[in-house]
Image 1 (cartoon, rainbow, N blue to C red):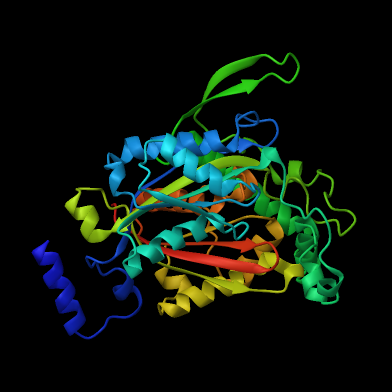
Image 2 (image 1 turned 90 degrees about the vertical axis):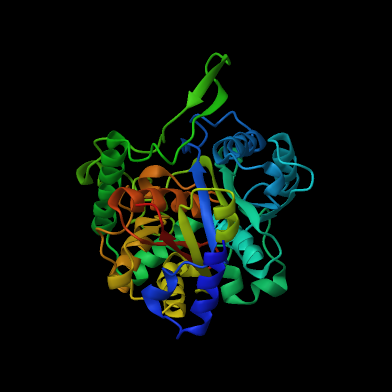
Length: 418
């Protein structure tokens, strides 16, 4: 520990490093990830979690965190849940934390920035650690889309609707995807070809067992829709990948949002999905003193706004903004990219606009093949991205996603497991 502190002092006395050398530097005050696990992702309304309440999914994952981390629960000072659709999320995360074995001295809260909520929860815990508010905290992202969506029950006040961009915040996500397709000429063929590759990669990854070190099995009950009979099941694998999906089969699927366009379909859009992911964070010095495995360093995260009607292009602004803060080059400094495939339209746009190397992005497939449980995705991407970094022995992970109402978010991590 004395050596760590001495190195920290020497780093402050020597000329500051920039770019890649700066973010890969190790200091006692770094925020690090010591555990990153998730549930299987199951099909909304018909999959393994369709009859499971959100509180039980969260409770089950928290129990796995306590067991797998082998950390004294008393050391976890705060838990932050990212969730979009559940109005009682603050109650749920507090109660589930207590039931899972965390003491009443561990606080709990929830955040909602739509599809980035899981990453926002990670950022919230990391920022608390950075400022010294806490030394150890848990971020979790969870969504039960089988329970319903997050659409507004009624329009905004008439004074708000006088502003066109404010009114555009009410546009359905499918409409925004069609806007991106039309505005930036992302053809139906380009979207279907991208989707086919997402399915192909997910199939390869699933068959090879690449997801195994990020997924924890969850025991629950499923009701037969015909007989009403309940049976106990143990969920162990993602249900979204459809093996054998091809461009030809996807091209036969009818457009899903014909009121707005004819390019986005159920085959080239993200799936409605249930699931959760958890990220345990603490100071590097605390992790070392506890002999916790350091999976990665949390470098930072940021957000950017875009026009609500083309919300899908959000990552194309958030990514350059984040990389600019750390003087990093997307092409030469970033090894693995997890970019949420809300729709193929936005994914293709971001690849083309930012010049992303497709070989680095969504190596195991993305939300089109795996699913997009809204509040969980930001944390799920970290689990998957770090696992892929370990498999390939790569160092720098970038995650990003578009956000409803016209935003984008991006996060940056350095893998330390080779």
